[in-house]
Length: 243
Image 1 (tube, rainbow, N blue to C red):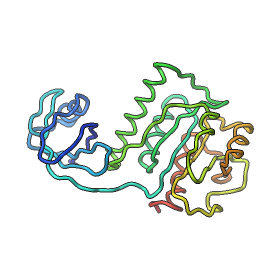
Image 2 (image 1 turned 90 degrees about the vertical axis):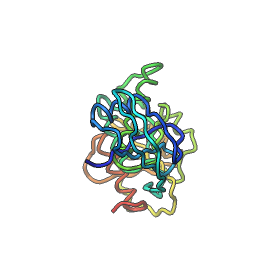
Image 3 (image 1 turned 30 degrees about the vertical axis):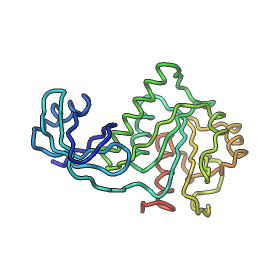
Image 4 (image 1 turned 45 degrees about the vertical axis):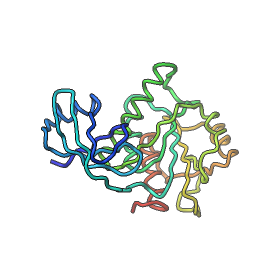
């Protein structure tokens, strides 16, 4: 069995004993049926990872001894900020999971003109916490040690007023410019993508006025859950660490 990787928000230090939170403990003891003496890898999002030995395993309660630290930097040289229209059902979960695997730095969910999802207050806060957990799980699987931040949801107009990214890109299938046409020497990239139905002409014009470059990924119209993954993959291949 591959050594499990577990995220913990706790401060980590070699040669110390810690108790894992209930969720991690349940996963190790009940789902993976691990026992004392076995090893896991711990990371807390502050860089690097630690080998740790399980010392006490009970249902819902696991203690570990933190042993060796490893630098293990697997982050992209690019800082990619993904702003994406909130999608219905499990599409948003899928986008966050795969975008994390592909190396994004943070994600901002957006409410735009064609967004059909209505969230606010406690429901929105709960959904944001859910998306953050998905990002953490994706880091555990993909061996990333830095967890992307899921920012508070914003309207598109609010997002456009923020100073995000040195190279700003907005997907628009009715243009001819492609990623390969862009000359780039910047490593801080903002990528803006609409929900189902895309961004309206007004919204794209607003993005362009705020220094976003409108571009297409090709002749086919991609679904909202496909477009960001294709765009991130191309960006990483052109200027990052994939390909």
